[in-house]
Image 1 (tube, helix red, strand yellow):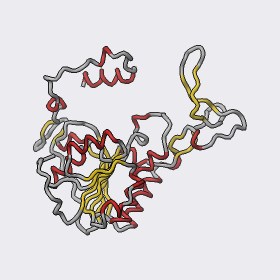
Image 2: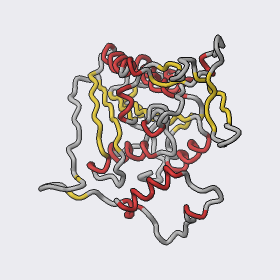
Image 3: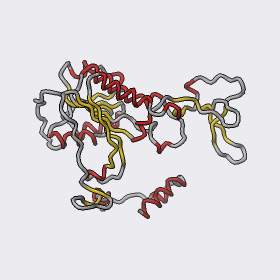
Image 4: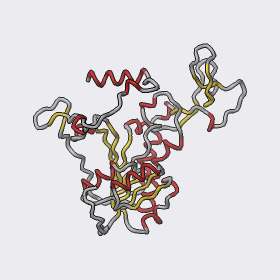
Amino acid sequence: MLTPQLILSLGATLIVDLFAGGGGASTGIEQALGRHVDIAINHDADAIAMHEVNHPQTRHLCTDVWDVCPLEATGGRPVGLLHASPDCTDHSQAKGGQPRKQAIRSLAWVVHRWAGKTRPTLISVENVPRQTSWARLVAKRDKATGRVVTLDEIVDPVTRRRSFRVADPGEYVPRHRQYLVPDPRDSGSQWRRFVKGLEDMGYVVEWRTICNADLGAHSTRTRLYVLARCDGQPIVWPAPTHAKKPTKGLQRHRPASDCIDWSVPGRSIFDRPKPLADASLRRIAYGIDK
């Protein structure tokens, strides 16, 4: 928090942070606007506990976002800013070929609920760039037989490798037991519905894929940022201030080492009881080389 003073909320409109986590986005909002977030929502008790420490002025709701009535939560007061950072794991490319969960991918639809109920002046959404290819999920099928792949894990008695069981001939596999993957023939359909839904409610919607380090952050993570507003004012995107290979007027990317307290002893990742996966070791080697 910027100040420990428990000030009264005198703003005319509320600031709401959905999927609030430990409070990183709320801190950014506070730094940008000079006032604290009014309402923070997250289902995870540990995350909310951390958020309460970082933002004691905020009203915290530890519950599933779908269990919150926007009108009850706001008490009918207008919302100036609604920020949402829904779980990105089941959209992320980093998940590779792992099965996807419909419930996780659908979390972003709660933004429509808040938009329809409270009509925030400005809505901001942050997620992985892959969300723009958001599509319906279909059952993965075995290439050899065409049958549905299930979520039942089996272990090869010889190699001890784990895999997902292919359904038997004629077996009915309910959807919640299917290995679900995005339908490549439907790429982006849900994303277009998401954007159009906001536009149909009177919002102007824009989005950008931005490398955070280009704006002065210490992370080179690239994220999707969506802005929607309904007050007739233009959406203004920040200009890059940093670059990996800076040209005139730009600074070099800031290193993560600036954020690390090197006086705090840590535990080596190389003497873990369970060794790191080969893919993790390759990423570490790549990072060291970089």
